[in-house]
Image 1 (cartoon, helix red, strand yellow):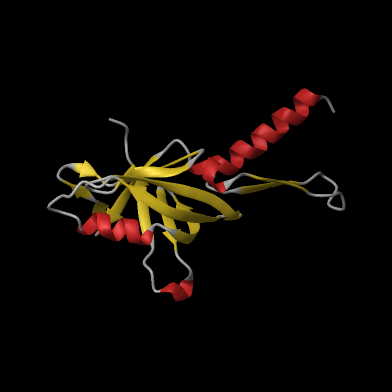
Image 2 (cartoon, one colour; image 1 turned 135 degrees about the vertical axis):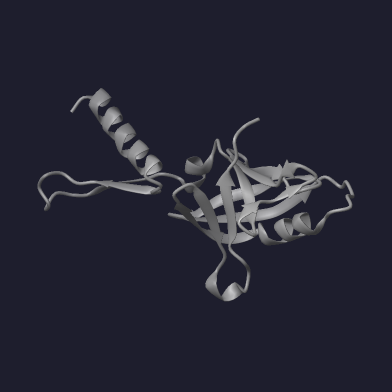
Length: 157
């Protein structure tokens, strides 16, 4: 098989997984007894390029007209917590699991800090990732007593 065909096949398989909300795609040959080739798509790569807005009480969380947000990029995560900007590491732990490291934030003091305090306390740690339609869920470990964080894509302005 030519190098172009292999590259094209891998690209199609990878894009199918990303577009369907899956993080893993398998390719089987027509012969079921043949080896199965599995191509894992890094979780963070599939989330990169979208600005995610925090959802609280079934609406976008906003502070003084600005949406509380999170963006994944090649260095981790960054965003706006309601008063301050923040950033931190994010690493894939397993197929659809991430670990968000300690966060750093600017030190501005605002009148409304409740949402920011909540987000900056709940983001660090281990999360299972679920994408359902256009909603991103960061689920903490079941026994942790921590809430699920819910985000939706926010349009660029």
